[in-house]
Length: 505
Image 1 (tube, rainbow, N blue to C red):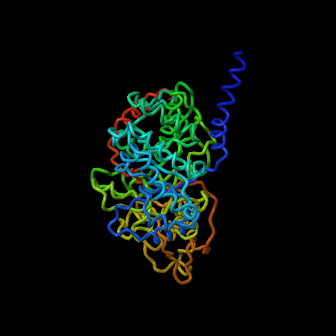
Image 2 (cartoon, rainbow, N blue to C red):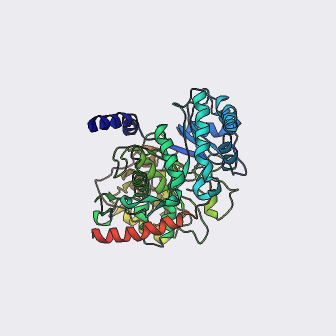
Image 3 (cartoon, one colour):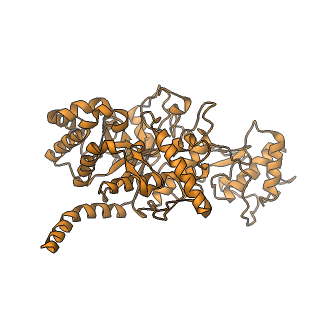
């Protein structure tokens, strides 16, 4: 009798196990969030043109804007629409209200617009706790309307969570959801499991780093390579963590398993890094934002998964497409975008080998040149390094050779910097030279002097593994809602990371 019951339980679990196993075979994707708190917001047609130009095939809207959905029609771009928090109460209290919402915002647009998910609210459990009791009913009512329209297998329903709901988050194997949320979290997870949906999570290592006051290493946050003795080790599982992002995602997996849900995939609905901040936000910088987002995209698209679930896709939406200058708060709050409102990249990402998404990294059209306002002596020193230890062939800079003129330190340094930059595959940190160099999309070639980034050759490179001198300065996106709540998560990660790293030394 017992074996029969075990078999029955197994048969009942098979659909859910298959759903999770299927995610292992899915290719991870990178999407972007589209916020609209922009004083000169581009038209929906302009937004879509930018998405197409950047090969962005997955977007998340913070509402279900009709004009935007119409502009996305016939593009095949996969769209996640949202029920804003201020509409949650009405939908959670009325099945008919939910049905009307689906009719107006979904049925009137599919199949022309490729809507694949509906996010019910955003960080409701931490930003709108009074609505928490209605969250699951809102999800069920929306899903019921999709079932009635025979769209429930095509369009998934979920809700984005702040990682603040995870307590004791490092080591990840000890993580668990705030127990006061169990009355909501258990039926919510059961709904996700029963409908083969996924757990939406917002992950912001930027806040973890800022709140750690230097305890968490910047390299650990930015996905930079770490020596083995600097990796964080989960003492219970002996899994090694080389970045905060993976640790937080695995903390979510372990938190779900603590409640006996082991087959729900995680999709990261927001992650990024601000490119600008005020004097109290030195870590919000172009270099850090570029490094984080470039490495995050590469990490996701490599389908490496996490230490707990290697090979399981962790698809991620970058926060965000545009800088939102109308957002309240500090300068960093307004500068999480990849582009300004004119569609100009805020920075040129380094995405060699990561496919075509966000192709503002035009790999054969970016150059490394000396900054015009840099200190001349520092530029000269960097030039000397490039032509010496850096092993760049600087013969084109000699008199009577193609790049001798103009005979200035800055012109010669720009050629040498660009030669080194392309020699090193435009890797992160190879266009820095102690802060006197910058990446540009303007071809600096002139007359017969063809820069390496243009595909021309005025000389030859010698083989070298030299690394250009670089700055350790903290350089470097953000939720639609306040992220002060991440402070508590950060403090937990800080303390436990310190213990774990010490143990591994």
